[in-house]
Image 1 (cartoon, rainbow, N blue to C red):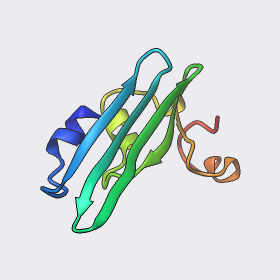
Image 2 (image 1 turned 45 degrees about the vertical axis):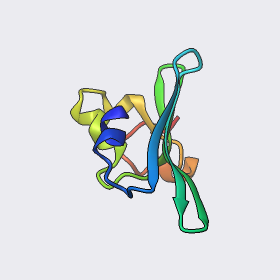
Image 3 (image 1 turned 90 degrees about the horizontal axis):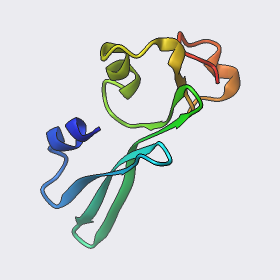
Image 4 (image 1 turned 135 degrees about the horizontal axis):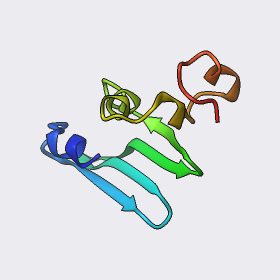
Length: 97
């Protein structure tokens, strides 16, 4: 996640930050800042580890964080697309929950 936040050239007025909670196994990357008079705050990536599965609750990167995890050697059976409905997960090549 830090790799994505460091490589992000989103906007010079907007920071990309990460929040990592190792004890609770929760990981988030978000944008925060200002665009003129408009406040910007938004979650780009949110991942939780529940049991033996990696639950991707938000994936706002172009190539998909699931693809990056698979390329890093994480088995597809260990990744759940939590942002998809339980019904739709059965149509992916990943874990359903």
